[in-house]
Every structure is written in structure tokens, then in C-alpha cells.
Image 1 (cartoon, rainbow, N blue to C red):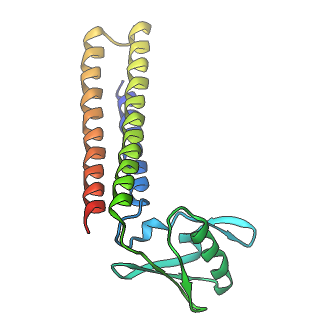
Image 2 (cartoon, rainbow, N blue to C red):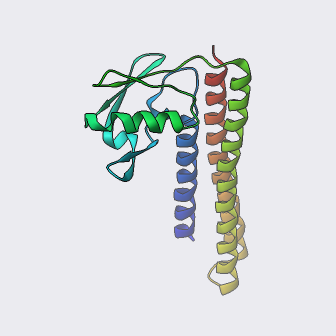
Image 3 (spheres, one colour):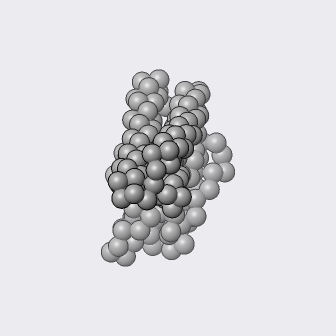
Length: 184
């Protein structure tokens, strides 16, 4: 039973990490390398994450600077950025790609807040699915006779506490991201 619980905690932590990464990639009015580091760039015929072929920095609050390791990849980096749904337009000087991050309109902020809430709900659903799987596994253990009803009840209470803890983490991430979005 303890193995089942350890696996559940690992899977729930992973769901929180994935949600955190998803939320980080949502654009706010502030420049953040997480916005673009997962963008796929056609690098010599294979799709490669931007973070693998360039360094990304934020010298100013509203500017991202992309320093490719290979200058020949600049046109492909620009193409990946312009075809993404970020609404950003790159400039290059042959050495680096500058990516100004314009402030968001009020309407766009509200739309992004809805996106944040939807992605957070996906994370909460993933955690609840882990809880459901664990409860099913615990019930199978009880049916096999490897656990008593008291063990089952105790484990179900423990898994609920674990679920609540991880959902609360996602809620905190969501509130932080929405607050960040609504800042002007």
C-alpha cells in the first residue's frame, strides 16, 4: 500500500509541475524566457525546442534577447516566433533576435485569465484522476485480502489529504499567474 501512495504522490507532483510549466508559457505583459523556450524551431530538418539552440535573456522588463548558438538559425527562429500564437514580432541584427513584449490590452488580459483557469482545471482533473486510480488500486488490494477495511479507510483519507494539498498548490499557482496578468 505504501508503494501505491508513493506512486500517487509522484504522479500528483508531476501534474503540478506540468501545470506550472503550462502557466509559465502564457504571456503576461512582462518578458519571460519561459514564453518561448519551448517553441519548436526547424533546425536543419528537425524540430528542436528554442532553448536547445539558443540562449534566452531578459535585459529589460519588456524585451527578450535570443542569442542563437548558430547564426544560420536566425531566420528559422524568427519564423517559429511569428507563426506561434504569441502575437510577438521579432527583430534581428544578424547576431541576436530581439523580441519586444508589448503591454496587453484589458480584453486580452481577461481572455488569458480564462486560459489560465482552464489549464489549471486540467491540472486539477489530472490530480483527481490519480486519486481515482489509487482508490481503485486500494480496493483491489482489499478484495485480494492484502488490506483490511481500516487500512483502506486510512489510506483513502491519506490520499484525499494528498489530493487536497496538490490541488491547493495549483490554485496558488493560478492566483499568482492571474495577479501577474492583471498587473499593468
